Amino acid sequence: MTPVYRIFLLACLLLPACDREPTTPMPAEDSLRQTVNGEVIGFEDRHDTWSWRGIPYAQPPIGDLRWRAPQPALPWEGTLQALEFAPWCPQLPIPVVNDTDEPWLGDEDCLYLNVSAPKSWSPGDELLPVMLWLHGGGNSVGSADLYAAVRNLAHREQVITVSIHYRLGMLGWFRHPALVAEAANEFDASGNFGTLDTIAALQWVRDNIQAFGGDPGNVTVFGESAGGMNTFALLLSPLAKDLFHRAISQSGMLVTSPLASAENAQDAPQPGHVNSSTELLSRLLQADGNAGDREQAQKLLDTWNAAEIMSYLRAKPPGDLLLQVQRAEMGVYPFPTMLRDGVVLPAGDPLEQIARGAFNRVPVILGTNRDEVKTMMLRDPNYTDPLLGILPRIGDQALYDRVTGYGSAMWKAVGADEPARAMHAAGHEAVYVYQFDWDEMPSGWLLDFRSLMGAGHGLEIPFVFYDIDNEMTYMPIDQIDEDNLAGAEPLARAMSAYWGQFAHQGTPGQGGDENLPAWKPWQAEENYMVFDTVADGGIRMSRTGVARDGIFTELAGDGAALGGQEGVCLAYKTIFGEEAMFGFAAVCPEQGEDCAGAKRHFCPESQ
Image (cartoon, rainbow, N blue to C red; front, top):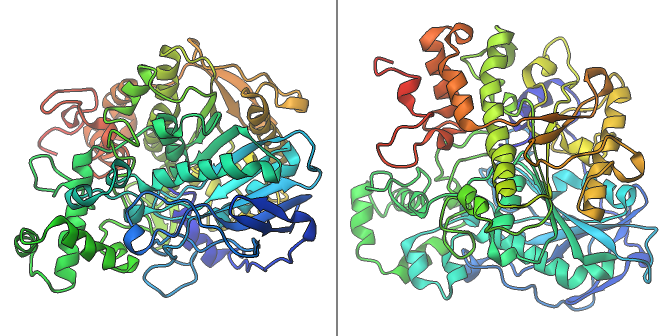
């Protein structure tokens, strides 16, 4: 679930835009600020802003602090020059994107944040809303510096922006019986360390942001993809109560993981994930020669106590852990996150939790892109044919659109419509939903991005940030060019205005001074805003969302368009199979119970 990472390799080989070397700015005396831990000085940034980069918000989670709740940052001597982004949290490299031959990159000492403020603000002026950005990357890759253009909102919308690094992958979410047994408190035992990092960053904002011109009583959390999932986690977490006051999930999903999936072996009565802590530990023992196979690994572990197991795990370099994960693709790997520990996050189903009204009731914006899964499927050999073995071409556009449409509809259901329905059912009215339909990516004679990606995953971010200069380095090519600028610029101006107005007032309204179409709340009519250029219908309200049962019913009867029962089965396996992105959406609630997403409706046993 990462923004266009699957086309990096293609685009960087064919198009010039991947070599963007950062330069260290000069400190600016007028940017000197006092935090609770000491003085910090930043620099004069683009678009009439001050920026401060690499401010610690927690102690380095290294050594004995690995897999423990974040500890408050320590004071420093003198003035901290906050001029450069901190190292990325440990992760696997993305081919071509990360210019390295190393098997992994980053540093565990990564819990830092970045702040930007409009230069027009002066001490004594009214405090400004704060917008805290959570980056995407499947919660296993990514960093804040890939999204430096979030700073554009500071001057344009008169807000203070904050972006953070948080622990990723196995270092961010990890739960093992030995960890629980030797934990000093319930937070250390939770396994939700990445989520606790985001809460610690919000606590830093509460205690420090006023020095930068921000109002600690008006904080908007917003994020895309994994950042949207983390936003949902903050809505669910009782520990985040009163630390933020609005929330925006862009292409997130309301999904949490049972503890069994995080802890257990795959062959346990309650099966664990392929990258569960037990599976990881077994592979580590075999990799370093302590055991010849799984059985020997388990026999050895039976002789170790909890402290010995955790000492062994904490002594491993991050790379040793990362290199044991399975099913990694382009740096991203699946694993259980948002663990249902009952302390940081609720123990039950998150949708039921929201329907009961047990969530942080703040105004929310929830949305997805019309063609989310095209970004993930543009090289699927079942639906695209590679030219020269590498360049994806669509053989049957109607079939490709049809199959990806089911996945994108499910993303809309679990990422926007179902949570909105649950919030509305719980009496929460300040819920706003959108769908992003812009599909005008630049294309060339070798790659037809418009057909391959449509309104794909991650493409809305430059519009939200008003990044018409293509500044953000997560994009392999310039998303906005001279051919689409005339339509894209007004859309970017509108989306950034809606987001800014929401941060100021808790409602997107008409985008403040932009006098845009009024964005109605979800309510019983299931209203949602469509974002597109004027040529394709413009910005407009629509009605009636989607639900997973309806998606499954339509797919089951879609043989005529998909090539018969065999085509239906293939589409089901691609989108809803056990190892597919939306496999969780097809699982029946109880063992042996039938449901609309059960495999037997789509794939007879003979297939």
